[in-house]
Length: 308
Image (cartoon, rainbow, N blue to C red):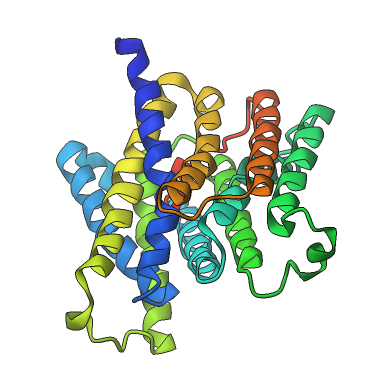
């Protein structure tokens, strides 16, 4: 039973993250994208620093040489990812968003080729093409003419940009932060990303909100993303990574769009046949990429956002 524990934690991670897309839609009924990201990561940062303080205070100290990288990756992986993610979620469906996010491992493989000089095999290329075919099928609903309107008003472009930010963050961690604790990376990149989100919130004027009149379901959505998706979700993922390794754990990230699909199905927004077929293509393609790219770190745990 003990050997099954890491896999159980990874399943919990997928279940929590997969439900985030519906929760994000609820939060965006009352908060702007900037407000959602800033409040979520302000709460999560407090929890992460408290966790580090009570478990290993030594991790509160960061080498000066790593500060610049943590700042860069915090802005890209937290501020960039969340800004684009929540902008996209204002118009994209939760299932479509989850499927596009699932392209992260494949995009990470190609960024690794340019930044880390990682060899890409033809199997990885094939898996990536299959994944993209699945995304196009979901977006177009089987109508090839609809592909010409992909960039118009569905939020998919923002979700795709969020995925690129996440992929860069994953590769950047591997390139610039070798030997740094994953919980330390998560804590400090969340903090720096939160600072960027708060500054953007203040300078954009979006902080002018009567917080006292917000309904309880709005705060529930924010707290869910901060406590469960960002804090517990990443701790579950970190534990799984440490016990079974990134090559075996990465495949569990592919459960996220499947969970998102069944979440919307449970809530009454049933996916159509093209959504299901597209999801199968995306998951199959990413499985091929992950199975042949053992040395690539593609875990959502490094995304610290999640949506994840």
